[in-house]
Length: 167
Image 1 (cartoon, one colour):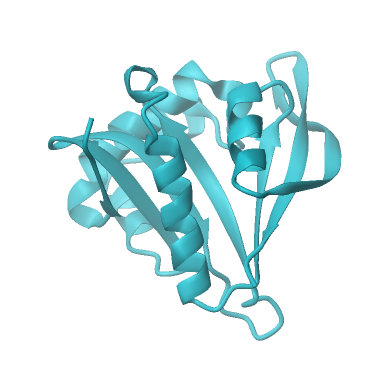
Image 2 (cartoon, one colour):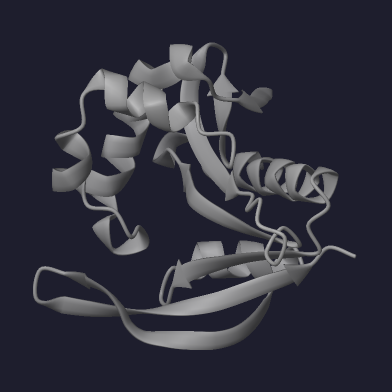
């Protein structure tokens, strides 16, 4: 399938909310945010999030339908602008295995480099083997594990901390 990737804006708020809530509902162990908290946000709050310049969100589209997400946090502070953080990576199950996840991560890497970042970090839930493999294939290295990084219900999930050198 031919996917189009572009930065999301306030006009994408409804589609973004739909995909984001699906991701949180279907894979609560993969995200720091919870479905319940995000479902309480109204459309104006979602649109406001999409307008924050330091938190750039990209969407992967199959025809005109949003089917994938990835974000990059780009700090502005003098002591941290050399770093970027990949967050909220998700591809709808029907579109996995076709290269969309890789293209979304490549887009995040390109944006981080364009902003002068030297490092791109992320966290991935231990046991999410497809995501772990993707990030490793793209050159990310594990630099630690956060034990009990997330708690969903009564279950804890460890998270791998990964980084990619961009220089």
